[in-house]
Length: 244
Image 1 (spheres, rainbow, N blue to C red):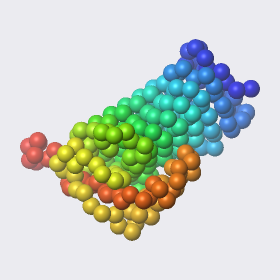
Image 2 (image 1 turned 90 degrees about the vertical axis):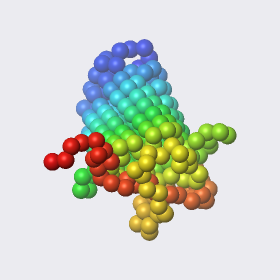
Image 3 (image 1 turned 180 degrees about the vertical axis):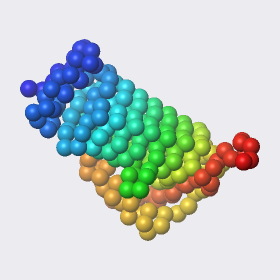
């Protein structure tokens, strides 16, 4: 049987999930109403399918497992995740992928503020965040590594691809943006450049995944050009400190 969340406390729901995962590799959770910490530290080979609105810290510290959310996520989805996959058929709140170290997050729709804040990479650990629509302010804030892909699909008239202070304090990694974007909302330390062949190969892989997960037309998505945003320096705030 599936786990029914309903109006039960998050600790009770998570207890039921963990018990079922001791004897099976996939658990379906229905009627979710903001319960927190679902899928916390989920290990490789385990999958949780969620129906409803997941609460804060969905899949925090994800450890190689897979989360499928048919609904919306609240704040801090994928907080400090170290691997695995999160696929959300809806939108996400603030601080998506906070401190994300590895793995992939796919958001069908939009994200709120501070998506990808403090993302980082190390050797083979390279996190990826793919956003289908647009993002709020401070996208990629203090980003130290990894990749963010912003597609700008299904945006309403007057909406911008990202809000103010995009890439504020960014000192590593890259952001791929599709189509027109508000240059006035970019932080001053960011360079805009065309994609290299290596960039195109990387982008192609994750856009194909996005299209497969959400039933999008790959050719239509790729019909608009992409640009790459990268930091000019690895020390954007060096002038704020005294010399050593």
